Length: 439
Image 1 (cartoon, rainbow, N blue to C red):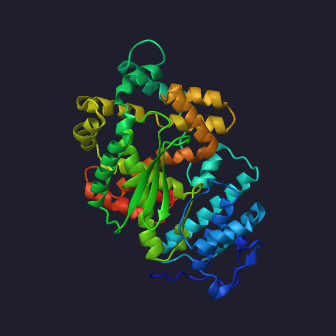
Image 2 (image 1 turned 180 degrees about the vertical axis):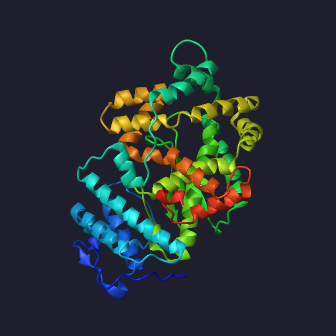
Image 3 (image 1 turned 30 degrees about the horizontal axis):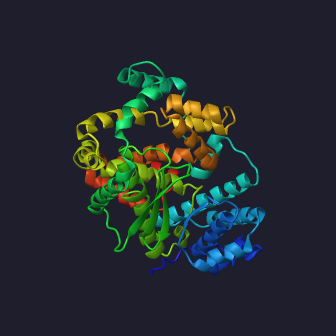
């Protein structure tokens, strides 16, 4: 491991941390209290907060003794919050680094610590509005859309699916023939994974030995999840509670695997943890700005790997036949999915109203049925997601849009696919924050 030496804190800066030891300790001032020391204490604080929040630590592959210490100490929320504030002040007191990556590292740690402190306050009972929470945790606020915005889009779908009864029921009736039979699901999903990996490795260099395991689970509020294990390995879980439509094969294979979450974590481990010795990236706190980058790149990565007609062609020639579906309908199916994609921000509006307390769970589900065209069972599952993950929902659609704008502003357009892959890989390997995507 090549450990990059960070700038040191001024002698006057004293940072309180080490909550994992049961009481807050004072970190050494001066030469010993450098960025690497702060990074270590940040990791331990994330692990400590994970003792109070089962969803908080999404991944950890640092020294196992740090987790053992956190498990044993069970630091209080008050102590964790105070330590996070102190560490954040320590980062803010650093002189601005000359190197861009070092500057990004400083900004990353400062914002991650800020989000950690907010999550502590939320666990202590503080309630923020949807927008306040998303800004504090994810460094971004999703745009607002009135009902009239979605009504215009639904008008186009009404013309596409004329008839009686709720539009969502007509849409679901049309969509039913595109469900992947359960007995074919694993083969279809693995075929999609192989294709996503092949397209990704043509453009991004991945380390030898990277791999992941796939499991099928039930009883979850999400449709798929990547649990990064470290050592270039992931566990990907696919929720089979509800019918899985053919588009989810590529979506999940790309989003959770290649070039999405698995590749993102592999590249961070390679370039930041192993090459630079930046231990803060050995832990992934879910409720933090890092998640907007993670989810945004995972969703945008789908169209990077399978742009436009290339996806329809692959579906028609490979996945539809593998699933036993009529390949002649692939173009029709994806033309409709483009219209449905325009409704993605309806989920944000449902979550915003629900979490702000202006509608209840039943009304939130009804909103999703009406404006996001989710059938009742899927709408109820989505409300359970709101209950568990709250404003996290912005990371998928807003994150994708922010990532796209960032990459296209650097020349990575659809008409320049090689540049797009280059910029995509560069973003996956960096500590850039959501607010930094505009720079």
